[in-house]
Amino acid sequence: LPHKTITPIAKDAPVPVAGVMNGSTKTIEEMAGNWEAFSFSAIRESQVSRAMTSRYFADLNDYAESDIVIVGAGSCGLSTAYCLAKARSDLKIAIIEAGVAPGGGAWLGGQLFSAMVMRKPADAFLREIGVPYEEEGAFVVVKHAALFTSTILSKVLSFPNVKLFNATSVEDLITRPADAQGGVRIAGVVTNWTLVAMHHDDQSCMDPNTINAPVIISTTGHDGPFGAFSVKRLVSMQQLGALGGMRGLDMNTAENAIVKRTREIVPGLIVGGMELSEVDGANRMGPTFGAMALSGVKAAEEALKIFDV
Ligand code: AHZ
Image (cartoon, rainbow, N blue to C red):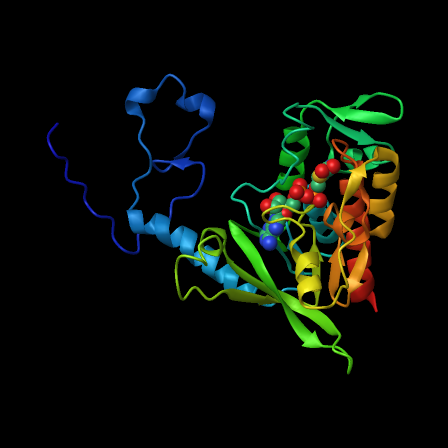
């Protein structure tokens, strides 16, 4: 094919508006069957770069001082973010998620099965976010876990006071002396791109970045390559004696315990979801997610107590 020269667009070319095609507002239906005449609005590549980087770096600048940082965007972290952002539009909430895909273990119900089980009374949370379910007596069933996760994600990301930094890991906690006995208060998080964090052993000079915040909520799940991050760090910095270690599966005991024990573990650091099982030696619950949603509700409540004093 002959090379086609594309005339560069002037530097100050207007940024095309979503839904506007070749200067005319067309609907999807109007486009259908008319593909010969179809063309995207012209663009210069740098406009795409700047549309992304200008926003990302403005957010990075803005959220360097946040009100709340949520570490981990699994079912508990996302439930926490939803409650906080809904209750307080004045608080700046940063979510740091190590994975590219937020959602943690909540894209499937258990093993590789689609349906997600929530024990009552966590069905209240599903009604709150508008996820349909089937009644099964003591519990309800969402037809696909991804319906829960995609719905809560879309709600959380729609709040103007929430920024999700995914593919970003919390590598450490920022601390301040809290007393004369060596106690600390948590005052922020130390972050890095996850791909960088994974290469500290074979690359040099990869210092991290920081976010200051008076309240950190850690929901990094049970122990694993990334899991239980904050509580393991509290042990190595001698703010927790030893971890209790997650115990075997007992749905009835585990779900009540996780919700009830969701709390501020050291000043400035609230822990929720399965990360808590490692602190207290609580049982795991396996594939039932009600405790994750309600631990999120409680973590938000605990955080707001700090802002309300
Ligand atoms: O990628 C992790 C996941 O998305 C993220 N994460 C972990 N360490 C991180 C770090 N920085 C940033 N250092 C980090 N992000 O945290 C998220 C944890 O999500 P999860 O789904 O693993 O935990 P959860 O407590 O929200 O939900 C637990 C769900 C489980 S586990 C379980 C069992 O094993 O019995 N049962 C249920 C319902």
